[in-house]
Image (cartoon, rainbow, N blue to C red; front, side, top):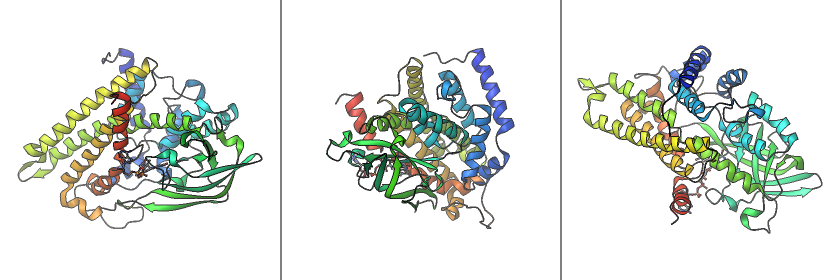
Length: 398
Ligand SMILES: Cc1cc2nc3c(=O)[nH]c(=O)nc-3n(C[C@H](O)[C@H](O)[C@H](O)COP(=O)(O)OP(=O)(O)OC[C@H]3O[C@@H](n4cnc5c(N)ncnc54)[C@H](O)[C@@H]3O)c2cc1C
């Protein structure tokens, strides 16, 4: 593994830095600094800038709109966007269903959906989990029954992130109730405006509307919206989950998170000295930093494997576990720094709030909502207990 950047890589890094400095939407930056909740339009503002530049989907093959960057360039890109506190784009189109469509889809599906994912015209949601099917996903009961050239879908999905804004959803549905659990499932693309779909909000601990229940009542979907073969949707589902887990590690963003904690703790007072001078606090920061460095090397090993043509395997579970735990510890330390200033804002600031925030700044206003929100990271994308099972079986051979 060669960890030095070549002169070309360094030039690329400068190009990326300049591009972000000159093009990151100012209004979005302002909202982030204030700790405001971000809207769909906020997410789309950065998405559209990147689409215009041709940089919105670095990991996609060039023929479908990818950048053709090397693995190192992609690494630099994620480092630089995190360093500049750029928001992470919504993953459901770009890193989940997009790769499924260009890998398993028909030419018609590719032509119809991929350009709209890249432009941000279509927002997607992921309809996998159900009330009785989370970790045990293959237990899902949502039924798709074939009637001529349509499927008629009935059932319920839950925890569907951003379904309230989604134009399309990718749904796992049971198409053969008699087959073994994983063998009777199909991967179906559903227009969220189809009659019979009802999206009901679930409000999270931090007061945010991020997840939903989705009810499907006789929803008619053309058969041409099924990706890959009927009853073989599990193949697409697994492919998507392995890609989802690598992205979840969020190493670059966590590195920036530690830097921010150091910056803030250097100016916040703890008695007469800075918080960073407190040996107990400094020790927590150092421990977190060491764990993150170890994770970074695991990610680099995965990327080196990818550069050599190996897809993400079961070791992506290690990235998921350690990455999500580190994200939680970062928000714990931030809440500790905010102290009682974090308390009034435990449900976060929304648009239209007319209170004037107190305390040291946007980071403190967001400290409590972020802390609560980040509890999700060890649950979604396959809970960490399940990832430990995968490591035990697939990596350690236990
Ligand atoms: C904020 C958030 C957003 C989400 N977004 C989406 C989304 O957009 N689309 C979507 O489809 N899903 C989404 N999910 C759902 C997520 O994938 C599931 O919550 C997750 O897979 C766990 O399933 P469950 O909630 O049903 O818990 P369960 O499977 O019921 O598990 C409950 C507990 O038991 C443990 N457990 C279960 N089985 C085992 C086992 N065999 N060994 C050891 N421990 C076990 C689990 O680790 C967990 O701690 C989201 C979840 C959250 C919290």
